[in-house]
Amino acid sequence: MKNLTYVLFLSFVLTGCAMQAPTASAQSNDFTLGKVQSQLKEGMSSTEVVSLLGSPNLVTSTKDGGEAWTYDKVSQVQESSNIAGAGAGSSGNFFGIFGGGRAKSENTSKNLTLVVKLNSDGIVTDFKYQSIKY
Image (cartoon, rainbow, N blue to C red):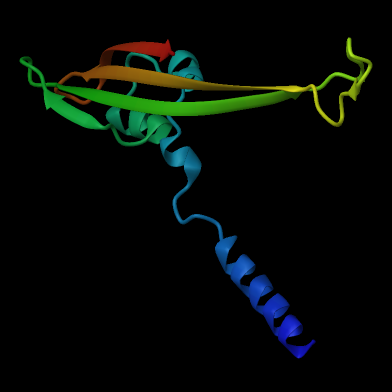
């Protein structure tokens, strides 16, 4: 019994340590299609873009002395569902909770790429994005 109490206490301590909040804010580089479409505008400063989308994945120089910032995000979503029937089959056997169900699993990948062009003063002059779901 003493060992069980010790194990339970240790598991609570370790669980508490594992549940600490992350040090970086998730919003500091929350790059989503919704933010791009609704909040990114021409005329914004580079500081405003970083506040909105976080740091870019790639920065390149342009011919006119400005920069092109590239953001790229790949995410995967897995959805699964179970379908179970209840009733009697053609042979008279009961199925449903005990069998006769089907499982469906679907994996979806999304890729969001954004290129923001800034002039030599660090002001957004243009941006283009592409969202692909496969």
